[in-house]
Length: 230
Ligand SMILES: Nc1ncnc2c1ncn2[C@@H]1O[C@H](COP(=O)(O)OP(=O)(O)OP(=O)(O)O)[C@@H](O)[C@H]1O
Image 1 (tube, rainbow, N blue to C red):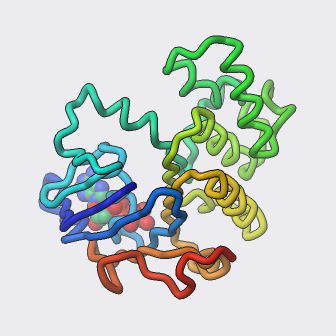
Image 2: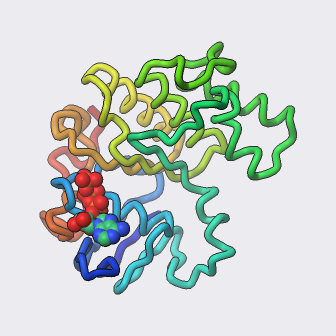
């Protein structure tokens, strides 16, 4: 589903963020992306979502080289990607319902369909009944789950998460990871960038490790457990 071939990224100003990165994330797979602060994790996710573009090499999504993607095609690619951030980027003055509905409103779904899908997404993340609350009234873990509901509400085939458990305690972090497993079990491809090595060790999914923009441990995603679920 995602293939990087000899990908390098240098930011304007000369900061080298990724160097000759190769990896392949298969459809239906769940994997971690890790590495020290500044290793290039967010940059790698930004190349997949075309927030940034590579300077060298090829980024292929579903076999398509995204270097050939025109600006007007980018929103169509992003519809297939659910993106989850540590700071979840919720609209605090809007209700939980409106936050989760946003991708569907942008896509022009009918009111009836939006209601059905938003309530189903909130149910999946355990927030059914909180749709009229504002995010400010919720705990950090609940706010993170609103962000997750928004990312999965249009059922994207690919879910990318950038430090999704960064502000959460170990129990809540595990709950969030279990939630990702549920989506993965129903066929969603999942890539999670995280510093949390403890979490990675407990979950035993394949791990891509970056160090100063280079992939450690060979060209493919490496694992001590060959992707076996923990
Ligand atoms: N917009 C930018 N302009 C210039 N340099 C940047 C930009 N974004 C990131 N960098 C640099 O690129 C390198 C990789 O950054 P990136 O954010 O991808 O790392 P990261 O592994 O996600 O770090 P963290 O875990 O701290 O979020 C760093 O040296 C960073 O300073």
